[in-house]
Length: 340
Ligand code: KG4
Ligand code: ZN
Image: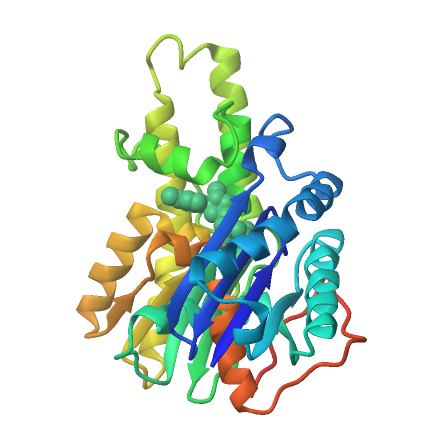
């Protein structure tokens, strides 16, 4: 069964064709990073406009690369929640028009479920239940994933998402946007023990996260260092600040994820979302998991970040479960995944 998956939830226009949930025939992503870079963050109105310009081209390219036409498709799936509302509406309008024009079933998909599914597309030995940490620019979510794609939400962020904090801290440090990759690279040359940034809620015993405290702490630290000229004088390096900040965020993410795995019968942990590309997060989680006899899985980077393949993938499972949406399908800015 071939499904076209469309995602326009944030700043990537994405379309993919996937066979039977896991075989990726094409996966096309048009990034808008250059458009948003000069503003130091995503400008929602610009994102919507760029999606409108790109959507038809990207959908056609995904069909061409998969060597299929609309006649070969069995369904069209689209992210309809959560995300930037104007951006989501572009993908939803496109999917509805195409489903109507080609008389194909339509499925509205939760973006987070797509991220969670991404690991399953490349690791066919993944066991259930497993613990999944989704960390991206918009989300920080710890869930237990059961057979049949049912979920128990363990915790989420009370304020900023993990990726958002990387991006904001990079902005305070004048490093550019998006900041995650830049901080990751700088941190590899720095000493994470130089500054003891706070690890909010690390001892709370639950699975909730809060990152605004560490963000503010870095901001004050950088402002003070600039005023004192201590960076120019070589008393403190931006590499050490980056490494110390990254260590604080990763410490919290790893501690809570391991705590969840220990409290579950699960022996598998999956990592997904843009921040899953972080090198310290990958290595720290892997070694902490080894200590409790758990295995960590992550997908390749192009399936960690936003893409249409993960949407087509989870849509295949939802189709088998009977999901079909009407042409009245709407987009929603919010939309948490539903607990079992
Ligand atoms: O999943 P994604 O592409 O888009 C959203 O759904 O948000 O994630 C983008 C986020 C950005 O905040 C970016 O800074 C972060 O992922 N990111 C990283 C790294 N690479 C990307 N954060 C930390 N370390 C990285 N290596
Ligand atoms: Zn995402």
